[in-house]
Image (tube, rainbow over all chains, first blue to last red; front, side):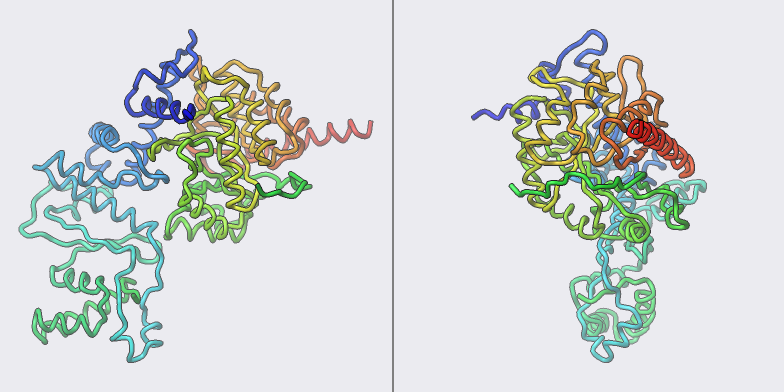
Amino acid sequence: MADVLRDEQVMFFDYLLNESDRALNLIIDDEKVGAKQRMDIYHNAYRLSLKGVIGDNYERFKHYVGDAQFDQFAAAYIGEYPSKQRNIRYYGEHLPAFLAKAFPDDTYVAELADLDWKLRAAFDGPEAAILDGTRITELGERWIDAKLRLHPTSSFVTANHNIVALWTALENDQEVPKAEKLGAQIPILVWRKELQPHFRSLTSAEAAALQYIETGHSFSKLSEFLMESMGEEDALQNLSQWLSTWIADGLLVEA
Amino acid sequence: MTQYPHNLKPQKSAGFGLGLRTEHYHPFIEQKQPVDWLEIISENYMVPGGKPLAMLDKIRADYPMVMHGVSLSIGSSDGLDYDYLDGLKALSKRVEPLWISDHLCWIGVNAHNSHDLLPLPYDAPALERVVENIQRVQDYLGQRILIENPSSYVEFRSSDMTEWEFIAEMAQRADCLLLLDLNNIYVSGRNHGFDPMAYLEALPADRVQQIHLAGHSDMGDYIIDTHDAPICNDVWELYRASRNIVGDVATMIERDDNIPELPILLAELDQARAIAAESAVVVQEGTNG
């Protein structure tokens, strides 16, 4: 049996995406407003709400490029990516990749957007019981063999440009420095501490250590891994410093 | 289909509420505000964790809440999204709301989503789909839900009944409750040229459990339901009239954009209280006389 309602909804939705004329036949026309202008209210609302949420999810990126350019980026993105999210909060996940493809010579824009997206994800990402001093005391000697993970809001951004300086200036309404390529790639860690998203730059050694933990290794396994890769003295020195920072930052959880 | 208790509405209205918005988290946390309950947008809290849920729990400790969704898509021809319903059920377990509501609309098709409350034709195929979906949702949640009348900008050629006939039939067949948005009736009345009073009088009053009041943007030839302005006089008059038709129903102000300081919304809510008190006096006088 033909699904009349479905056919109508497909046509209606096609107007939201493509302004396809077929939908106008579904609607009663009138002289005062007219079927097209009535359908345009929905067509425009669709774009406005998606543009609004991209602006919320990519606040520093929007600030950096300015309203006029943001409108262009958002319109192009919305045209290419119809929303498949149930909850509008999650719309816009492909924007960093979209920007990287659209601006291969200015990839700092995509990197800045990536940092925005991951900070936003950390903001309302999952909860987890952190491994703090109290829990370590509870575990006693067993703690060094407990399998660990990073807090589930943790993620990494790879910066080839000075996006930390850009993001910080945008956040604090300071003069935004010129975008510059860095001498070497810098990993940036993003996570949530208590209710606040945070980020900080890492050395490649600390990033490697954190990524090793993220695969479910214990502190004792991490120690072995580091001793092999950097020698005993450096491993012990780095570990004691990193461990106190990681615990203070609420970065470690039991796997 | 599950049978629900015969009494459709609580004996006593839940009183006067506001929509909880992030801009007002602090005033609600810092001191007890003069509202009887708060309405949350369910989707804003259907996230894994962090500040939204922390604030929700904190504020919920001091205020009863109702859950109002925008993504149920009760008129969807795609069928229900059970992942969404799982999330809604989990949130409901956390919040223990007075009730759960969503809109008479559909939001997308073929797994694409408009994030808008799209209009339905008022005909038999749409009615059948909506009734079936409401019954499934109610069975899944184990309770009656409230369905809100939409604001709309188009009328379908295929419609062969009025919106109020559709809603009355839907509520009776699905055995659901209604969230009466008076601004939406006003907006759609202006957009489609119907009399809001005829609409109000035709609804099954015993199923109306909540009223929404809101502002809109008047574009001259049509009105857009923007929720970004104070409630207009015509909608206040509709509210006054509604008290004599649907009785003492829990009422709230819905503001989603251009959100003012909390005291401004509280003053607007006092206006609703004053109208309700006046209509209560009139009813009492009528009864005594």
